[in-house]
Image (cartoon, rainbow, N blue to C red; front, side, top):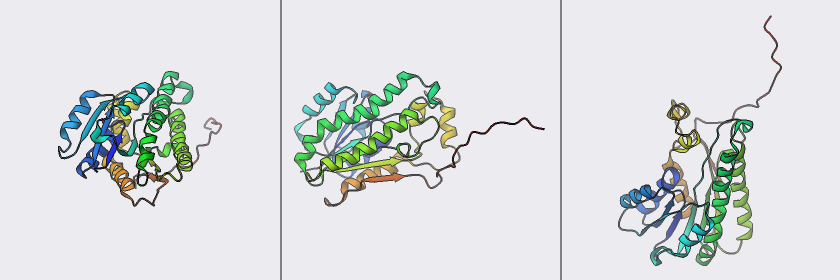
Length: 257
């Protein structure tokens, strides 16, 4: 039986690159996302030698998630890998200047959405057993704070801890759980975060060498392809040209003599 991967947020970035990677490797692919036209475009571009099922999905909607999972075509019902990729960052400003609605959107997508999909697919993954995987896309922001990360970083810290706790509860089922924590990666992420500010995008990625979506897709495929007895709990991946900074210190500003 051909293996199947279920991907959230497949319309761009890591999700789209993962769909291409797995389909080219002969996996059946379930691609989900909110932008129907992009799903259709991606579906048409994937190899016709595998089964590709596209489903318009807002992971924040519990009933919609349940409906998509319950009505999967027979050819892709036996999901072996869940890639929880859907997520976003908003409000790259100090917390005291952030819009509360943006905080709620990040919580609803990055936390509630991930929980909705995981809960809906766990029975299927447990049914598959050995070799089944839940692969969550976290972020270095879940472990390393920086200005303007506020709720985004906190939501990714949830993803990391949720992944660890799932490992405990799924012990003995054969289902593996991994958290991938990327650093700077070039995608639509910054455009979404800044409300489409192309100058901010160019400033973020210009004159350096960030991760590409394909880099993360390769790691997702690596995790899914490991022998059944191996579980990688956490992968923190940064570009070679990105590292940590020193502590910020607030000092009294004395007037120049």
